[in-house]
Amino acid sequence: EGAGPQGLDTKFLQQLDSAHYLHPFTDHAALREHGARVIVRGDGIYLWDSEGNKIIDGMAGLWCVNAGYGRTSIADAVHAQMLQLPFYNSFFNTTNVPAVQLAALLADISPPQFQHVFYTNSGSEANDTIVRMVRRYWQLAGQPGRQAIISRRNAYHGSTMAGASLGGMAGMHAQGGLPIPGIHHIGQPSYAEGGRGMSEAEFGLEAAGWLEASILALGPENVAAFIGEPVQGAGGVIIPPSTYWPEIQRICDKYDILLVSDEVICGFGRLGTWFGCELMGFQPDLIAFAKGVTSGYVPLGGVLVGGRVAHLLTEKGGDFNHGFTYSGHPSACAAALENIRILETEQLVERVALATGPHLKACFASLVSHPLVGHAETCGLTAGLNLVRRNGETVHDCEPFASTHVVGMLCRKHMFDNGVIMRAVGDRMIVAPPLSITVGQIDEMVERIRYCLDLTL
Ligand code: PLP
Image (cartoon, rainbow, N blue to C red):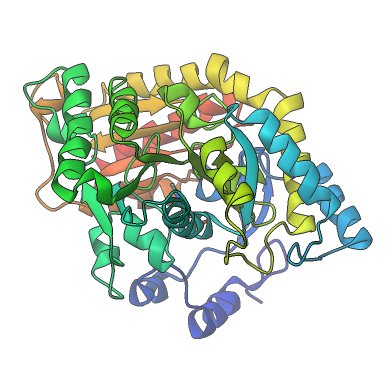
């Protein structure tokens, strides 16, 4: 009795869930009211819940299932590796075959300055590693005073102490004694938020100028690095003007500051290039990655280390006293090798650039005619649209709703109930579907989104 089509008793699972499982980023009082939705299966861009409902996963899990669900060959690769050697560590002068092969492959597909990788298990750990690595770098470079790291408001860099400190989420800083010392934040390059009275190009230069002002206030001799996401993801798909990143690069070069690209979302094809910095036109010294490297099949993250930092660490550094038991986990690296092979052989990154990305852009442009939508932006296969009261044509003629998040949450609920997953960041609705999505499936997704916008009106 009460068993869904999978033979699962949803109510019973929800009771166990509520009794024992503390979920990340979740209000448990609210969760208890409805019960968690139990996701039981995935194939391509679709998920099924324990009640048999079919859902379009507009968020690729959490921006990570780039190759889509149901990839037997990734499961086979991990299975074979687990039988051969499930785990061995890379401390104390040992290594393993998939970790080496993946390191060489990452050097091959990333921008030419990257010939080395440091493995972690997640994006948060990658950013924690970066904090320690840049500070160690400046010690080795004979400028130990360079300890400050500049980041941006509303950035998301993870949930560990250093990751959440680098992040600029007010709600996270309000809990747990954050940020750690030496982290500073400047404004985010959101044209809709701060660009009134300026062209996008002008605003890009203005927003990059906030970095220079911060460097000068701190003293360049105290600044180690600047970190940013090429396109801010969890902050609401904030796509900077094209002038922004080249100007950031110029400023970092001028003051000899390390430039760090957090590519946990943008890496592995999300923007139609292997790494987001390639699209945005800058050459970072370090790249944080995770998520799309394995399409989420097994946890894996890491830091791509550019020549300048790698040289000092490997030639002059002695021990770098940092690492994780599972750094270079062979089964995770086996998943990554097969995942990247899929992205390459199916040319999924090129498809984002040439077909699915442009189609998503056209579809989202058409949604702007909806009375609830103020403006919409896409970049590759990620997009955001603002739910607003419209007073005119431009992005600055829209009025936000008085109490943020209420309309966004309602819209998200309609989507949830009608088989499409979109995320609500305040009243900004965002998508980032698997890169395996087809043009026809984008139409199917956008049709459902439009229907749910109608329900929200
Ligand atoms: N950096 C960015 C840009 C992210 O979007 C995320 C996660 O969403 C992280 C870091 C943290 O990664 P993880 O959740 O794997 O620790």
